[in-house]
Length: 335
Image (cartoon, rainbow, N blue to C red; front, side, top):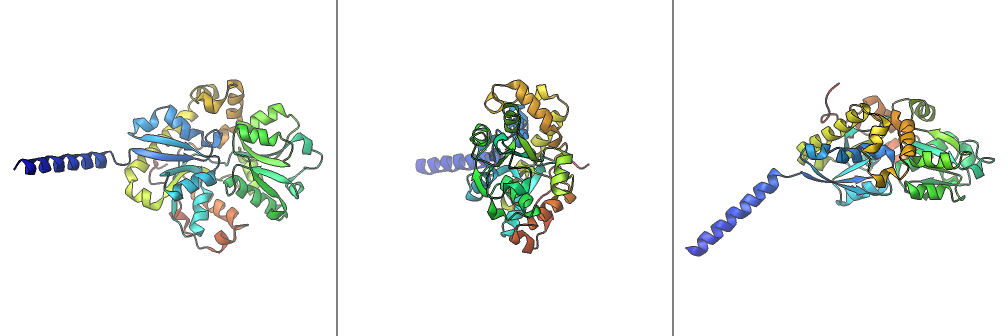
């Protein structure tokens, strides 16, 4: 009888633990970031610093990677639940038969700058001048490499005529840019503002932080970039968690829109902001137009991203992709 009671108590305890895990299911989220020091992913970090994840009942573990491709690998490999990365990855993966879904949009423009160092000023005057040179991207397969491939193709330069090297983000990207071995590099703020101040002779080949620069590069003003995306399977089984994540990001975007660059910089961790607060504020001022305000994916913007990828990616070009399956606005408030 006593043994029966013991087993009954154990069973009840196990059931209670399972119920507790179910009640708290999805509260812990492993969120992979494609380079946390890059300002393009700032809302992901700010949501943590402002307490918006916690306010939504979430325990978010930010995992910092050197580029979007590495974050994607973490998601596919199962070591991350959600990625803070660029929307184009969902379309590229759709062409591979894998269903990834973006569920909140953080950037209206890609936010990257293709810049050439002063020592290359005499030879690099445009995208076509990059032929035969080395260009830095955050990581192989990242969105920065995709943008480079597109711009080279549009300029009539075969992509394989340029060597690509991974330079990461932040301090490693600045060091690579100043090494003298690159013809150009993709930089996000604050790295771009750092190199421009230290190297006044830099030449900007493409500035994707603003509407004007984005329109010049892609022919359109709306080009959704940084999003939170995950697998369709995770989204189906964790809808409440995804909804809370989306709310936290939208709260952050609204907060950013209502505060000054100085106030925003004050909430960024020193490890990400760096020692020079004034420089970070300057970088914020230059990149501020890129941030979204409501978290929604514009359908026309999604179509543009697909069209850009199709110009040079044969798999995307050949695939029949239902764009409505690569993103959802179900977790953000309607206009």
